[in-house]
Length: 186
Length: 359
Image 1 (cartoon, each protein chain N blue to C red):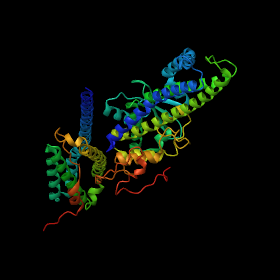
Image 2 (image 1 turned 120 degrees about the vertical axis):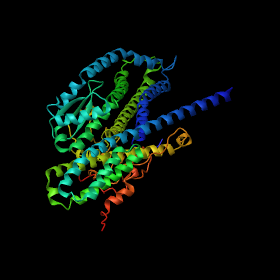
Image 3 (image 1 turned 135 degrees about the vertical axis):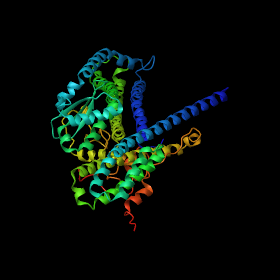
Image 4 (image 1 turned 30 degrees about the vertical axis):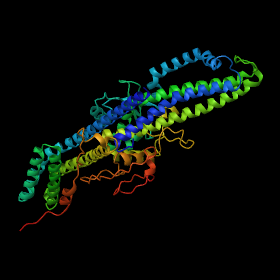
């Protein structure tokens, strides 16, 4: 009889622990989703800004067709990206091409002095700042979630319950490409 | 459970807060048990143990309850007026401070809250506090010095900190703590009063040998009451500090910007002076008060608050985030979460800074 009670108590305690752990994981996963939604808001604002920027640059540096087309295509790809992972990749490509566009713009003093361009540039830099903050928060939430599903006792059942580690929003290799000088072709 | 990031850090602190709150009834029961034991040791209790003490407490209960109810009613109905009176805060509308009001309103919209009343204190001190006990009466108060010296992001971080206090119902928690401290204070006063009057027979305790053992009991009772009172204050202050850590973390959850919170703390450090009684100061954004071993201060040290933000919220420094900066996936090194400051949580690659020059 006593043994039965002990077993029941142990089962109940284990069950409560499992429920608690599961609920924590759900909350942490929801945290990462909310954090990504905040990034998404900034990304959308950036997408709205890009066509204006391209038009303005075109007025002064229309023959920089390669760079301009690249930005337009990257924007289209980012706008049509469906899944989170493909969105991250497309947005990183857009960041890189925008960086090259800004580098090209440096060579045109008239463009740099244009009030509209300056306005767009400051808007873009504001969005990039907020994006950096939102991305940092997202990565923080992802790190917490990933660490939680790998911690004991969650590691025993997290995968079976469908908790998969999430990707960081990392500039990674694209950042190196953005930093290097644009390629010159003859 | 170890704190792995911001959310788990908040959970841990909430668990600690609950444990601290649970400490009050335990402390109260412990005091009563100790008093009974003291009475037994002094040989004053014959029939049911503790009856004399229960009689002592119950005997003075009616008056105490009336006083407590009246005091609580006044506090409940007039707390905002009292706070406004001692701090000189005045309520402002959207038109009076549109930018500040918008900042607060945007934060509230993101959490689906009714915007609290906004109040401003015309003083150079840099501080802020949240007040109000229930929905519709919540209020966020900031000083003019804060508005003049902080930039937009830092101000948002401070407002979010106060809003976190409101979301977490911290004012209510601290009221519960204050009620327990009040009860323990009452026992304390009873013990001291008994010491004064007991010697000339004002205390009606069933005692066989009044002259000998009553003195011993009263001495023990005073010691127990004093220790209990000190412990109650220590727990109350520890709870207050715990809620500050949670509000700092909650602020980052609202604004997503740990750096703004850090630079706001650095700017406020040393300039937080705002004239108010201790009980009101406990609610401030920041408050410095010299205490014994930090046991009697309402707020954790600024350096520890910043260290916690760096370790759990991904905060870097007082500098604003640079555009397109790498996400700096700094590995967190979870130390014992009870003492985040000792883990030296400087993420690699972060610019060096020491709190101090800003103070």
